[in-house]
Structures are given as C-alpha cells and as structure tokens.
Image (cartoon, rainbow, N blue to C red; front, top):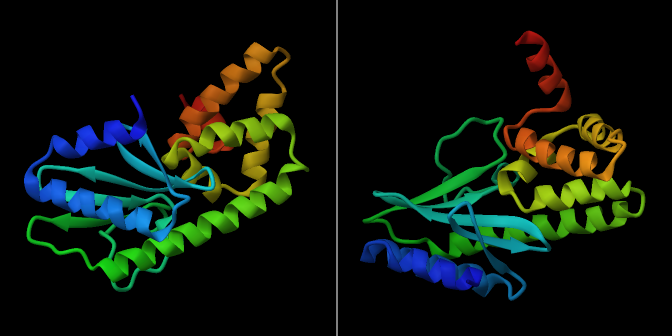
Length: 203
C-alpha cells in the first residue's frame, strides 16, 4: 500500500473534527512546497523533504499533534510549542477540538523547517565526498527514523565518529550490517557510544 493510501485510511479512522484538522494540515504542508514527500512511519503520517524528516502528524483522543523533529532549531512565536524538555530536539504543536489553525503561522513554521532541511541536505552533500561509505550508509538508515536522526544531529562530531569506527571495526560485512542496526536502536534512545559502554560496565 502506498504511503498516501495509508495516510488516507489513518485520517478516515478518526472523528470528524480530527479528520478536518488533519486534512487541512496536510494541504497546508503541500502548499508550501511541491517537493514535500509523504511517508508512513511509526503508524502515523510523516512528511520529508530532501530525504530528511520534516514533520509528523498524529491524533490522540483529545488532540491532533504536529511534531517537528528539529523544532528546537525553529522559532515559533505565533504558534507556541507544547512544554517539553529544553534539551530535546523535537517540538510539538497541538490542536484541540475547539482550536482553529493559524494558517499563516503554521505555513511560516513549515517554511522554516523546509529551509533548515535544504540547508542540512546541502551541507551533507558537500561533506559526503569526505565520508567513509559505512558512515554514509549509517546516516542513510538514521534519516528514515525521525527520532534517531534528531538525536544523531545533536551528537558531537567525536560521538558520531565513535559509532562510525565501531561499525567499521567489524571484520565481516554481516557484522557491520548488524552493528548498523544496533546503532540505530541505541541512537534512537539518544545514547552515545561512550554512554553505552558506561552502561555496560555499570550493569
């Protein structure tokens, strides 16, 4: 099933007020750029641009949430984020049943998210020629997971390099592939390689 079809079914399965909100939010996202791609991830609609996560939309019993994986880097004065830990890269905007969408503010926020993705993609492309192929493969896997990618972007260069070296140390391709999968799980938890080693020693 295509991502767009899965998203259609997801939206259709919610109460009318949530359906209307999600349909309009979806329209607004696409109105900002024709390059935005829809994808189905973590059982909810997500949107990408330049092969990087842009935002996700999800519904609970009382609200519709729009989550920006790199929201901490985006100013949102006219559309306040939900309270969250300052050290987290993600930010969320919630709409409840009686809420109206401030469409101009939402479009501005999406534009800022797109501009950031374009900037990051350009930097990644320029640096790709200097990266080890395994490093590039790891980042390709991480990009498909918004939480893991957001954590990866928050790591220092040395923390990233530690993961790359650990993967490269695998003598067989099978071992390296397995380590990439393990790295995805650990990075999704926000753990650096050093923190993983400390946790193992302390157990």
